[in-house]
Image (cartoon, rainbow, N blue to C red; front, side, top):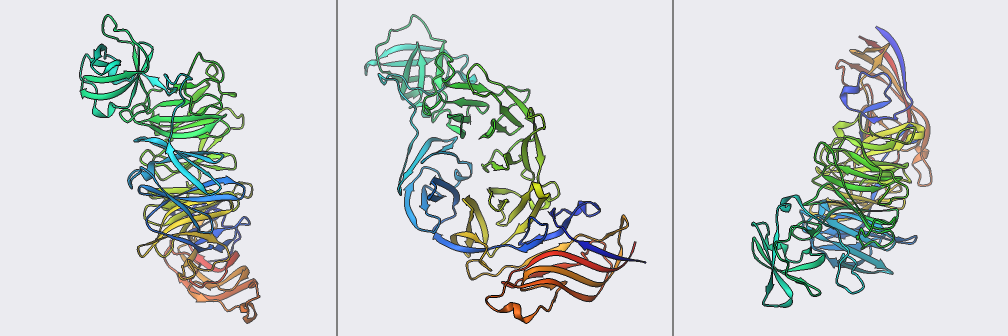
Length: 572
């Protein structure tokens, strides 16, 4: 039997999985529920949720920051977007083409007062907002001065590489022609697509059958002597799909991947974001890149960081060219983690690094350059808290609080308090009455969409709120890891006394027993008790996995724990 005095002065690693319980160098907890780890390593009760507004359906929240004092919350719901100010005022409600199943795959990028949304099954949509007036329109590619040519990307797809087209006149007139393929290759949704045949752009007007189409050209043409083998098709169309991902980088609009060409990256001309004409390869003209590797690459998203990062289902690529020109493309794959393909969880910028969710859904990876700034590494930010990651559906990072929120499909949330300079990378588990649906951050505020008893609301984390929605209390808990002493696992532990050092605290329940605090702290203008509080004669633990102490409660009062000290003896 050995006496011990053990002080837990830092909880910098937050909640950790059971497989790490025997590691002596981990400053973690076996459970951290509705509490956060502070920059000093202590733990506090999480902020409550303040009501912002009611909404009439489940929504995906997207921040739309037009100016310094003009910010909006976009609540994307089936077939429409409701736009709110941060105080809950609904500005407008506009129709959109996306259904319930489409919303998780929508990606977006913003530049000034314009946000562009992409989805592989829909033409991109452009949201413009200024002074409270909003419009949502289809993305249009630039046209030539004579309006004959459209500056969109064209290519020859593999599934039509052997197709030749025989051109014949059509009864509709001189600008129309019948395209006859040498085999069946077309479907009805080819209508509206654009072909380049004989160096002219043709718009498909009618579908006749799988091998015949009616095409229109804005100009005269001559019937060729035989079938045409040299032709190309518009990359983006209803038949071929639309961009999967989007970003702005070095004043270019970047599209990454599509339904029919998953490994393609298209970059607009510099400063002309709807012009994708590659021209003659001048420095400011458009660029087209295909990711080539031994395994197929399905682009999940593109990220504008220090370099243009391309996240695929198989790995992480980067284009490091500065400036980015057609003649100076330096692209390579750096890591092989992979990202989710069935939904879009926006990568977050955390201290200059790109944080993304891996294809397993169990890893939060941080893409950072090595010390020589030549190669990226994808370090795991939740390696000790895998038990909190299960089917994530949304993510945001609050830079002011240094806090990352990850919403799970089950309606709970994993939250990381992160401060690399102080060595804090602590995960905790958030719950509320109801289910978290989505999360976003605007400025220093983080907003959530919550479903409570069938009612959907937008709420805001508020450090002055002691409960949720001014109506729902929540329980909180922090439990120690199993005791380690002298490098050994303690089997029988006898606790004589527990001492907790707190700051500005008005409620403290330790191992199920309420600790008596001075009566003076409960006046309205009192900040709470600061000092040491203790209880004794706590019995014996015979289970090696039972924590020797646990702080818990449901009181709507502040609690700020700086350290916990346990006194007792143990048997190994």
